[in-house]
Length: 171
Image (cartoon, rainbow, N blue to C red):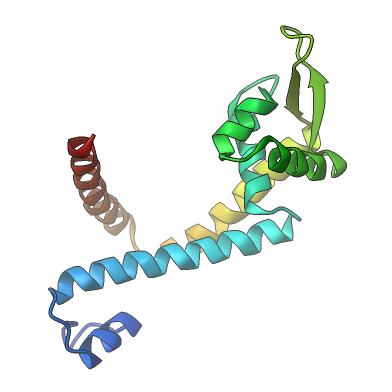
């Protein structure tokens, strides 16, 4: 699979050791993308741990951040977005509120409703964690020069578009 002049990674070694009835180039692509995904996810988990956040909490903060000022969303919308029961979302929000990252406020448009609002500390925690993760990702991506990054993005975009076309065809 790897040419003699190229460096070999664990995927090359595994594929060379196993007689698979598949296109080894395709298998290499899939295995590498999967391996990179796992490693980036592990890196994110480590970053979030540095900020005292779990992934679900971090995503909830991000969802509030993307709402724009005043950085509020209804509790039910957050639960639906996260695909959580109201009880599970309440537990997540309790932890975030206890940490001072969000606060619950009355919905001015619905006397019975409650909005979740991102605090300044919550916005800072989310933005700082995003910056820290981006820095780590940049260190990894530094293995590629600017043209290689553009080329890789173009190739991955083509794969993503093919998935999107196939998914639309099933709809």
